[in-house]
Length: 389
Image (cartoon, rainbow, N blue to C red; front, top):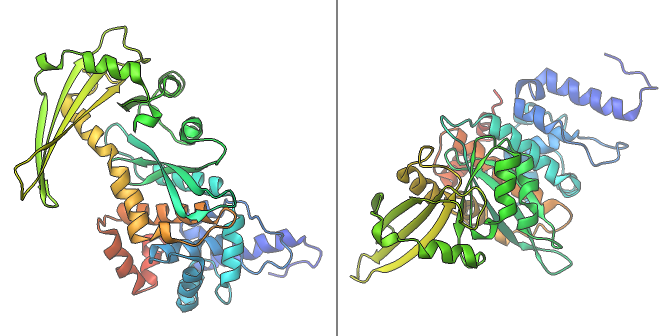
């Protein structure tokens, strides 16, 4: 189809991207690529050779194969067969490292994370109540001009292990002020939000219950001294353990027990319905000495809505964000050693890692490192993880 010479340059780029995608089954054949195509291109259109969706698709496919940097993404693309690149909406040669770097550094990272999170949420619907863990992580290698590492706040689905949202915590503020902003982009109606003691804030509780129709399960520590003192003074000695479990592994044995009481009006926290005491006793297998830790928590769920065994699972499941997301990004993707520091590059790369981890889990794989190695041996395997046939 001939294109008029008077057609505006942005229309030409859009036309070429649409034709390429439709002819090769890219955007038209993959709803993920369609979502990526909805991101606003930060570049001036004059001189653009690769449309944004093709650059993003290449980046996702490469990260799913274990790429850790802009250079590694470009090397993966340079080695990929023409038919694989065509499926990713690439017309002609693969995008160069400089193109990938400029695009990803200038991209609206929060918009990318929001679109990815919404797409993943729609494809990971739990059978029962959705439980969402919220926690932050510093990208230690991404030191800005202010001398601080980039800090990202993320939300992950307990059951599916997929990332539902992420945003940058500006160095001028902290996680607490960004909590509602992160939650605003996620459907949390009737969901349970779990968080550590940093987010045990009255405003957070009111926001979740009164504005969003959600529930909370918060750990209580010294940052809420009056509430912590109230919980400690409850007659726990008279309350029997409602659920106990024993785990062995990693050279130790761990016994966890939970006590739960319904709290009457007067507890210094809005909408609190149950108070929780969790006791963990840990012993290395080569010793007889036990180390005991007692943790307190509160939840807005009533006894009719959540039994002690469920509360124990959800409280322990909150720690999974460290193991199933932060640890994977640090160890498997070497995120803290990444030298990506400029612009929005650190957050965009973290978002691509989140997406890769989530795609692998949704495909039914549990060993992320092994799956990355398997995918890296054949570029077409990335297409299958992306849902491109």
